[in-house]
Length: 195
Image 1 (cartoon, rainbow, N blue to C red):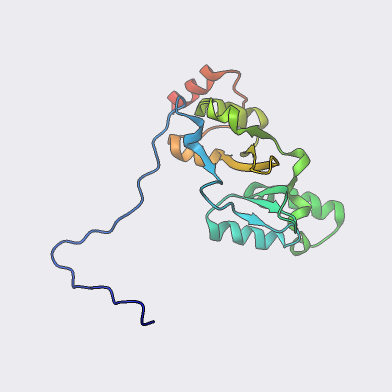
Image 2: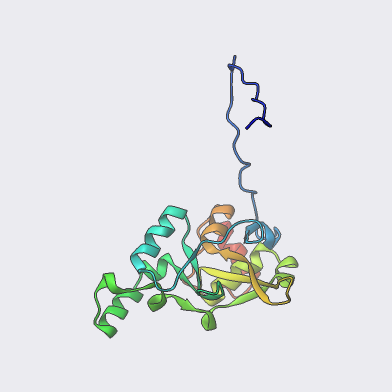
């Protein structure tokens, strides 16, 4: 500890403010899709093991303040995604009826959406897209999330981003109905103007 000197501290005087991160960037349907993507190259992904209980996954989502978790195998490869809708919706009830298990026996892998049923978009396509394109894609699939892929430094496919309908709604300042699939960009715009 002899190599370190003490830092000079002083008592504050006058008005003292507290720094805070900048507000989320305001976006429109015409904004770059990158403005609403959670970039996993800059932010740690919320991940979970497929063999933990569904209840633990729900608690972990609440703790992290997220509505989805990427499910990773022991080798850290993606095996699926689990969302709050998976946990709080009909999936657990159907699983209980089909398998005759108790609610607390359901594990993540029982109700997650497996890798082979996920949809991904290339980062190259995202870079040339607008928020409206992402909204149309989410509505078309009826999903709350779409993953964004790129090839990593070893030229292997890697999830580099996530689009979340909840996050996009927050940034747009509107609720996006998934009841009707928009046929085109104009219908999405009309829906947003109505709000």
